Length: 254
Ligand code: ADP
Ligand code: MG
Image (cartoon, rainbow, N blue to C red):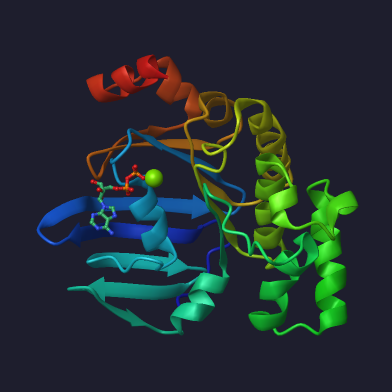
């Protein structure tokens, strides 16, 4: 345990590398998220955005590098993680919201949100239910607690996935293109929830193609290109004066 500096990062990634076979898809990525930061990760398809997010919570084990979450450090060398606390403890501290929602299709909205509270957080059913109901209300779905995901729109399903992540009270939430699978008319309702989370000070790392969100909501923008951070900065800096040709081209293509 490293002593915590309250103004310091709550999530740090240091020189994360990841190879699949002979192909190195992450070539040394570092990132610091302080409390209340909203970091947008931009980059073309295949640039390594999802792999990087997955390495942060060890859904994917990096080939090498270090992840520090709230003072607990996981150091990986040659694909072998060395850590001070079990990986499950680390993972619990990071919520994740996926492009494809990943809800349990045979469970209701309420059961989806209660699941982790009971099995991971070890809450009683009663306590889990009241926490779940609170977060379902937070994303505006109180009317649908007993619905099955298949009976909800994509936007509603994604809001359930956000409620499920919030209910675990994570230190930070990772979003991997949360609106990319949605019909255009449903994107706004999900972005609105995400914006309100940002406004209440949640720490978020968001892979997105929503330039307006990156520009207006994030505190920092990181541009990945071929497994490296090519540019990063405040949204104002990044969009007003893009430096690399690659980022200029990326913005122009949006
Ligand atoms: P992005 O999310 O930016 O589109 P990804 O992180 O999904 O990019 O992928 C980065 C690169 O890593 C791509 O070339 C992809 O094909 C490769 N890749 C991702 N996952 C795997 C895997 N499990 N096995 C082999 N290659 C992978
Ligand atoms: Mg991806």
